[in-house]
Length: 130
Image (cartoon, rainbow, N blue to C red):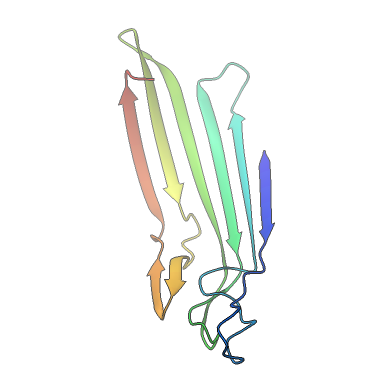
C-alpha cells in the first residue's frame, strides 16, 4: 500500500501586475493525494487485485483566478491473472478506470479544459513477453 501527497504553492510572480502576482498558477492544484494498493487474493494465488485512488484540489483556469475547475476524487480498480499457456507466460488484466464516473480534468488553463475519460473498462491479454 503506497500513499503519496503533495502540498503545492505555485503562484504567479514577477509579472509587474499587482492584480495577478500572488494568484494561484493555472492548472496547479493546491494539493493532491494518491493511494495505490495491490493484493494477492490468496497466498500463492495467480490473482491480484489493485486499487488506485486520486484526489486533486480545484485548479485555476485563468491567471486572474476568476474561474476554477472543481477538485475531484476518482478510483480505478483492476484484477489480474498471471499464469502460463503453452509453456509461455500469460497475463489477463481487467480494469475499470474512474469507477465512480466523476468529472475529472486532465488539464485546465487559458480557459480550456480537457476532461479525463468517464468510467472506462478494459481487458488486456498478453501471451509471451515479459
